[in-house]
Length: 487
Image 1 (spheres, helix red, strand yellow):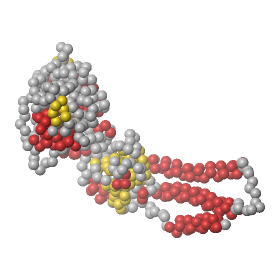
Image 2 (cartoon, one colour; image 1 turned 90 degrees about the vertical axis):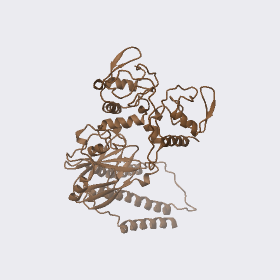
Image 3 (cartoon, helix red, strand yellow; image 1 turned 30 degrees about the vertical axis):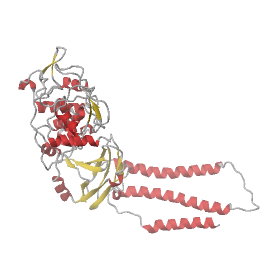
Image 4 (spheres, helix red, strand yellow; image 1 turned 60 degrees about the vertical axis):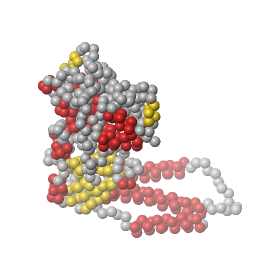
């Protein structure tokens, strides 16, 4: 009896807490009423089920309480009860699903006058892209994403040149104008959620999802990630600022376009595609062996495109796009005269990345057919370059230098075998040289290995590394980075 009374009391307190709580939210988006109606229907159905279950539990506890003279009855099944329960469950689930499908259809059916905003999610921040004067967002490809192109915008698409980029976590929207939100993710599953707007949508890697709404109230509202996306999930927050259309246009005019950003960061007049190729050439270590000066390791890229190259088998071939793709993907297929087969095959590069590297070779190195470059590159080491001391107020980063100088093209960072010894555990270890001597890889040895690599050749490796034109500060930064890779 006591338990039955406690259950009924718990039910009454829950109902009072709900009706006295004032849980309704203010209308802040155009489709808030349909979403709230769906939530209300779901809450009403589940509330009725909750009431029925608690009342039945209280009745069962009281009706079938223990009695000394009582005797329980075994009833294995009750078809009538099963039919009633199945019917009520089917009606309840249908009543919850149908309104939800209607609202979802409304969310993904975008009005014709809606303007687009792209939301790019990554661990653990939000970035935004808005169309320029043409009102159309340019084409993107995730393979083009890089430090200078965080959205992966196609540099040759004219529609993307005037796209406005917001690299902060604050998005401005005009009051009373429908907006379609296009969601992309760079890494893992995220979820764009503004609680006051009542709707949210997942950002899934590899696809573009969308939703729409019309802001109807001025103010600033918080953006949350509603999908657990890693250790920084709690801090993945942003803000939507809804303001009058005139103020929104003023804010939009202050944003840089993709073309302006590319022009600002342009190096030596390179196109955006060629600048992507430059970043790839640095990150993949291409410039360590090739570059735009003579090198004993690989042909120079200076004047390479358009020239007639001579090969070790006596044949000749015009250096065009097809040849360069083959030379990158299958470097052993055609060996240039005077060079050995030391280049690994870069089979993981996409067509876009290959095109970017070729564009960089063409624009940075010039046209060999017009510049009169010799058909074969000399194989003697380049003359020593003067060392320029780094600025005293500039802090050098060894990891960055290892990429920009191309060290990681021959030296791995994870212990794997390469053209040169791996840097993992190198600093402080004992090394056996080609002449049989055993030396300790201390600071002095590492410095000599960079500036005079042929003087103390490690056993099992070929004398392929050219003397590196590094300043003292750059050498020390690389040594410090090697020490970080050692236990």
